[in-house]
Length: 163
Image 1 (spheres, one colour):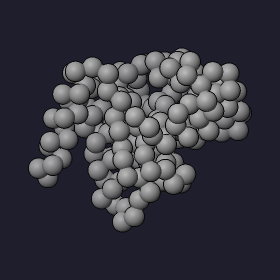
Image 2: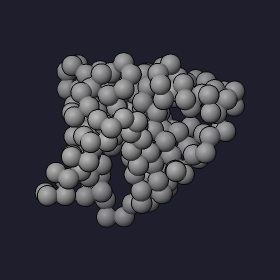
Image 3: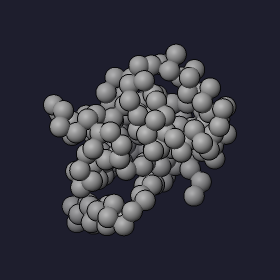
Image 4: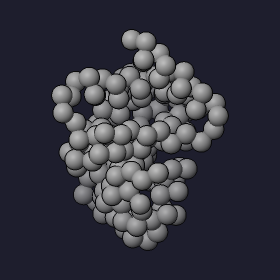
Protein backbone atom coordinates (compact mmCIF):
# COMPACT_ATOMS: atom_id res chain seq x y z
CA UNK A 1 0.00 0.00 0.00
CA UNK A 2 1.37 3.41 -0.97
CA UNK A 3 0.33 6.40 1.10
CA UNK A 4 1.53 9.97 1.10
CA UNK A 5 1.38 10.35 4.88
CA UNK A 6 1.65 8.00 7.82
CA UNK A 7 0.62 8.90 11.36
CA UNK A 8 3.09 8.24 14.16
CA UNK A 9 1.53 8.28 17.66
CA UNK A 10 4.20 9.44 20.09
CA UNK A 11 5.01 11.41 23.22
CA UNK A 12 5.68 15.11 23.72
CA UNK A 13 9.36 14.41 22.93
CA UNK A 14 8.54 12.84 19.54
CA UNK A 15 10.32 9.65 20.51
CA UNK A 16 10.62 6.50 18.42
CA UNK A 17 10.50 4.04 21.33
CA UNK A 18 7.11 2.42 20.69
CA UNK A 19 6.25 -0.16 18.02
CA UNK A 20 5.35 2.27 15.22
CA UNK A 21 8.30 4.56 15.96
CA UNK A 22 10.72 1.64 15.95
CA UNK A 23 9.34 0.41 12.63
CA UNK A 24 9.66 3.88 11.09
CA UNK A 25 13.23 4.24 12.37
CA UNK A 26 14.18 0.81 11.05
CA UNK A 27 12.70 1.52 7.62
CA UNK A 28 13.96 5.10 7.37
CA UNK A 29 17.38 4.56 8.90
CA UNK A 30 19.78 7.30 9.96
CA UNK A 31 18.31 9.83 7.55
CA UNK A 32 14.85 9.53 9.15
CA UNK A 33 16.35 9.64 12.65
CA UNK A 34 18.14 12.90 11.79
CA UNK A 35 14.90 14.34 10.40
CA UNK A 36 13.11 13.50 13.67
CA UNK A 37 15.93 15.05 15.72
CA UNK A 38 15.57 18.28 13.73
CA UNK A 39 11.79 18.21 14.23
CA UNK A 40 12.28 17.83 18.00
CA UNK A 41 14.51 20.91 18.01
CA UNK A 42 12.19 23.03 15.89
CA UNK A 43 8.74 21.94 17.13
CA UNK A 44 9.14 19.91 20.31
CA UNK A 45 7.95 19.27 22.85
CA UNK A 46 4.43 18.69 21.55
CA UNK A 47 1.34 19.47 23.58
CA UNK A 48 -1.20 16.66 24.01
CA UNK A 49 -3.16 16.31 20.73
CA UNK A 50 -0.64 18.40 18.79
CA UNK A 51 0.68 17.14 15.45
CA UNK A 52 3.95 17.98 13.70
CA UNK A 53 4.95 16.91 10.20
CA UNK A 54 8.34 15.75 9.00
CA UNK A 55 9.67 14.58 5.68
CA UNK A 56 9.71 10.81 5.57
CA UNK A 57 13.41 10.61 4.66
CA UNK A 58 13.86 7.12 3.31
CA UNK A 59 10.31 5.83 3.78
CA UNK A 60 7.78 5.05 1.05
CA UNK A 61 5.43 7.78 2.33
CA UNK A 62 6.24 11.43 1.62
CA UNK A 63 5.52 12.66 5.15
CA UNK A 64 5.21 11.41 8.71
CA UNK A 65 2.63 13.08 10.93
CA UNK A 66 3.86 12.77 14.51
CA UNK A 67 1.15 13.28 17.12
CA UNK A 68 1.24 13.42 20.91
CA UNK A 69 -1.52 11.06 22.00
CA UNK A 70 -3.27 11.34 25.36
CA UNK A 71 -3.09 8.74 28.10
CA UNK A 72 -6.17 6.59 28.62
CA UNK A 73 -7.81 7.50 31.90
CA UNK A 74 -6.53 11.05 31.90
CA UNK A 75 -9.04 13.88 32.19
CA UNK A 76 -10.84 14.39 28.85
CA UNK A 77 -8.75 11.70 27.14
CA UNK A 78 -11.44 10.78 24.60
CA UNK A 79 -11.90 14.42 23.58
CA UNK A 80 -8.13 14.79 23.37
CA UNK A 81 -7.85 11.70 21.17
CA UNK A 82 -10.54 13.11 18.88
CA UNK A 83 -8.63 16.40 18.73
CA UNK A 84 -5.43 14.46 17.94
CA UNK A 85 -7.10 12.76 14.96
CA UNK A 86 -8.46 16.09 13.73
CA UNK A 87 -5.03 17.69 14.03
CA UNK A 88 -3.46 14.84 12.05
CA UNK A 89 -6.06 15.25 9.31
CA UNK A 90 -5.52 19.02 9.27
CA UNK A 91 -1.76 18.48 8.98
CA UNK A 92 -2.37 16.14 6.04
CA UNK A 93 -4.64 18.74 4.42
CA UNK A 94 -2.01 21.45 4.95
CA UNK A 95 0.44 19.33 2.94
CA UNK A 96 -2.27 18.63 0.31
CA UNK A 97 -1.91 14.89 0.84
CA UNK A 98 -4.26 12.58 -1.03
CA UNK A 99 -3.83 9.65 1.36
CA UNK A 100 -2.95 9.05 4.98
CA UNK A 101 -2.57 5.91 7.10
CA UNK A 102 -3.47 5.66 10.79
CA UNK A 103 -2.13 2.90 13.04
CA UNK A 104 -4.33 1.69 15.88
CA UNK A 105 -4.11 4.18 18.74
CA UNK A 106 -4.51 1.78 21.67
CA UNK A 107 -1.03 0.42 21.06
CA UNK A 108 1.91 1.34 23.21
CA UNK A 109 1.87 3.29 26.41
CA UNK A 110 -1.50 5.04 26.13
CA UNK A 111 -3.56 1.83 26.46
CA UNK A 112 -6.91 3.05 25.10
CA UNK A 113 -9.39 0.17 24.85
CA UNK A 114 -9.51 -0.88 21.19
CA UNK A 115 -13.27 -0.35 20.90
CA UNK A 116 -13.09 3.16 22.36
CA UNK A 117 -10.12 4.14 20.21
CA UNK A 118 -11.86 2.88 17.06
CA UNK A 119 -15.08 4.74 17.90
CA UNK A 120 -13.26 8.01 18.58
CA UNK A 121 -11.01 7.66 15.53
CA UNK A 122 -13.84 6.93 13.13
CA UNK A 123 -16.04 9.66 14.62
CA UNK A 124 -13.29 12.24 14.15
CA UNK A 125 -12.54 11.15 10.58
CA UNK A 126 -16.23 11.13 9.67
CA UNK A 127 -16.70 14.61 11.17
CA UNK A 128 -13.67 15.88 9.24
CA UNK A 129 -15.19 14.89 5.91
CA UNK A 130 -18.68 16.04 6.92
CA UNK A 131 -17.28 19.49 7.79
CA UNK A 132 -15.04 19.82 4.75
CA UNK A 133 -16.62 20.65 1.40
CA UNK A 134 -13.34 20.09 -0.42
CA UNK A 135 -10.59 17.90 0.88
CA UNK A 136 -7.28 16.96 -0.65
CA UNK A 137 -7.59 13.63 1.19
CA UNK A 138 -9.17 10.93 -0.93
CA UNK A 139 -8.12 7.82 1.02
CA UNK A 140 -7.72 7.14 4.73
CA UNK A 141 -6.20 3.78 5.61
CA UNK A 142 -6.02 1.91 8.89
CA UNK A 143 -2.93 -0.15 9.67
CA UNK A 144 -4.48 -2.98 11.66
CA UNK A 145 -2.33 -5.93 12.64
CA UNK A 146 -4.66 -8.37 14.38
CA UNK A 147 -8.06 -9.91 13.68
CA UNK A 148 -9.61 -8.38 16.81
CA UNK A 149 -8.77 -4.84 15.67
CA UNK A 150 -9.99 -5.55 12.14
CA UNK A 151 -13.28 -6.88 13.52
CA UNK A 152 -13.73 -3.84 15.76
CA UNK A 153 -13.10 -1.37 12.93
CA UNK A 154 -15.45 -3.24 10.57
CA UNK A 155 -18.14 -3.23 13.27
CA UNK A 156 -17.68 0.48 14.02
CA UNK A 157 -17.62 1.44 10.33
CA UNK A 158 -20.89 -0.44 9.82
CA UNK A 159 -22.43 1.68 12.59
CA UNK A 160 -21.36 4.83 10.74
CA UNK A 161 -23.00 3.56 7.54
CA UNK A 162 -26.37 3.29 9.31
CA UNK A 163 -26.30 6.90 10.53
